Amino acid sequence: MTRFALVTGGGSGIGRAAALALQGAGYGVAIAGRRIAQLDETVTQTSSGRAVSGQPAMLPIVTDVADPSAVDAMFAKIRESFGRLDVLFNNAGMSPPAVAIDELTHEQWTQVVDVNLTGSFLCAQGAVRLMKAQDPRGGRIINNGSVSAYAPRPNSIAYTSTKHAITGLTKCISLDGRAFDIACSQLDIGNAVTEMTEPMKDGVPQADGRIAVEPCMNVEHVANAVVHMAGLPLDANILFMTVMATNMPFVGRG
Image 1 (cartoon, rainbow, N blue to C red):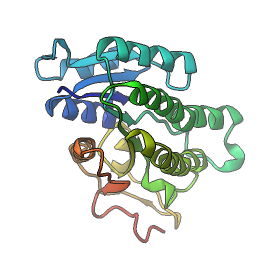
Image 2 (cartoon, rainbow, N blue to C red):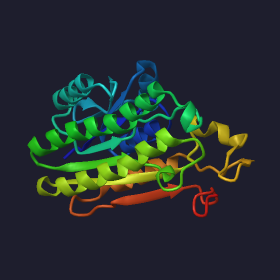
Image 3 (cartoon, rainbow, N blue to C red):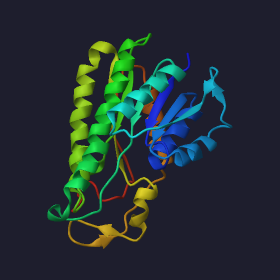
């Protein structure tokens, strides 16, 4: 039976890499994001855009994950196109400028919370509703966490707070999903090469006040981890996984 996945934030970076890896592993994949041009660019990189069970192997859906009505419409489209959902990679996220707490605006705080936390909740909620109702029942939700939840960077209060909250979201979904054959995992990622980590080539602030260049890893390692987690049978789960550049300042950071 063909399996189907949804990747939010699928128009770039980790989301694009994960979507392409899942498609390459035989999944039908829906990708969500706010900009159709970026989603279409991901689609062009699929394996010749081949169909899966008569459905498109990569289905772009323009969605603002912080908007409940947009998320509802996205899941209606997935139900219409795929008939079911086996995997959600809750990946969409953002980070505000690195500023001190007293300089962060309420608008900046709210925007990060809306996308990183509320957006993850809304997408998980939609996935659970579909996974409970489909036959065969169940599925898997993989939340994109961060090593920053355990070892914050300087001036990252909004991003770090939301990623710390993702851990609570993961634990609650994992617990509440048991009765419905829904597994939930969290992937904590450290320094994958994407647009977001470009500044690390020139150096980023450290806890001791230094500016230092940080090691990064190929984003394909993150994508492979997503495929591995997604492929487990529902009676097995990797609750938390950290995949990171070996020499990045995480263990012993600061």
